Structure formats: structure tokens, C-alpha cells
Length: 126
Image 1 (cartoon, rainbow, N blue to C red):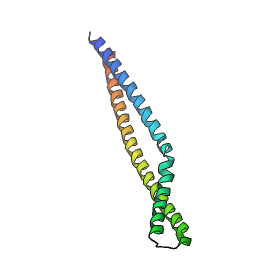
Image 2 (cartoon, one colour):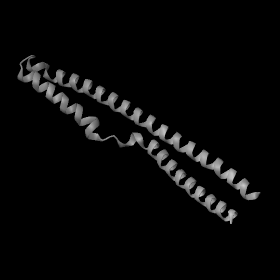
Image 3 (spheres, helix red, strand yellow):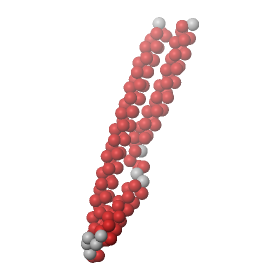
């Protein structure tokens, strides 16, 4: 009777390990595909809109003459593009760090379950 219970527990641990391995595979896929989901609107259109707003403010406020407006637009676009790209790079790095920590926890759980399985197999042999 005890051997049947041990075999049943072994099957449960094996199914848990399989589920954890699937979770680990999903986490690895998410880490690998992390940089590919930057949208065009967020990466390019946001700086374009910001540059347009800055240019409009300078034009309406008559801070510069009409010949310098295009320079203001280009400078505002480049600066806002740099800020947006740095901000998104930092967000991606934080997200990746979080995902790697989750993956490490999953790996630790798999090792823990594997050790438990090994001990259980030793008990079944005896």
C-alpha cells in the first residue's frame, strides 16, 4: 500500500516538474521576444508630435522668425526622440531583469522538485 502511495506521489511530482518546465519555456520565449514589441507609434510618432507642439509654441509666441522654425522642429524632434528611446530602453531593461528573476525562481522550484523526486525514488527502491 505504501509503495502505491509513493508511486502516486512520484507521478504528481513529475507532472509538477513538467508544468514548471513549460512555464520556464514560456518565460524564456518572453525574454527572447522582449525587444521586438516596440510600436511605431510609441517610438516615432510620439517625438514627432512633441516636436510639432514645441514648434507650434515657438511659432505662436513669435519667439523666433520663420526662417528658424524648421531648425527648432528638427532640434525638438531629435531631443524628444533621444529621450523616448532612452526611456523605452530603460523600461525594457527593467522588464528583462524582472523576467530573469522570475525565470530563476522557476528554475529553483524545478531543482527543488527534482531533489524531492530523487529522494522519493530512493524510498521506492528500498
